[in-house]
Length: 280
Image 1 (cartoon, rainbow, N blue to C red):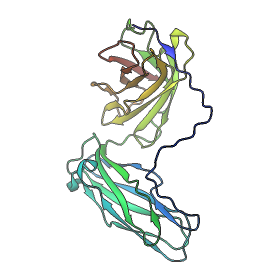
Image 2 (image 1 turned 120 degrees about the vertical axis):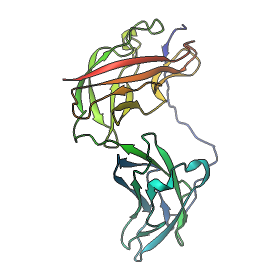
Image 3 (image 1 turned 45 degrees about the vertical axis):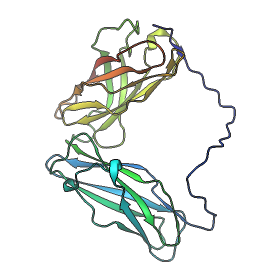
Image 4 (image 1 turned 30 degrees about the horizontal axis):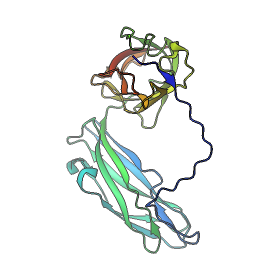
């Protein structure tokens, strides 16, 4: 395997000349937009869920504003409409307020734990300028876990033997801080990948979702700050999943893929590595 080394990036002041499709508007005009372009609609297994999607205006008005939305068809929307209800595609931003809410309800007729997409954009806001950026709503089934569980200090231990491509544990045995990372079932912790080589790279953040007894890594683009000279080395999800018991947060397992992008290291296919996390 080629030698792994640290990517150093020095920002000296970059001026972008790229074109942008974002609307240009004067300070006296109003922009109506989604402040967040991704949202989760978590539907409890055999039950329901609701997502409130905020829509912002950049200035106040002494009258109610009506904002009209539409569903973006095609590959951008893959949800089964039997599993959602949209009360209205007209949203009111009340007089004297900067925002209103677009509501989508979920019903577990056939919702899966793998998210399906509902993409919505703004098509009219009266005299205001509208942002073309849509919101992507990820509709997924969740199994509730007790509030505050699976958080705090956990001892991280590698189960899979050390791979020759690394020469040291993927993550050293250590106590990590597991925190809530967005939705009620989403968690994350930070640790330095192949720290034992003493290269001095920054910690990687590993995002997870506790999805109906399965622990899923929710990104395939987890940075390591390392390369073998031909692009970044990244971590991500694996074909297998870890597992947890919703009634007992004393431990859970996690499986990740290493070298999803191998940075020119010649590690193919990606390594699949398992860890145990035990509450301290």
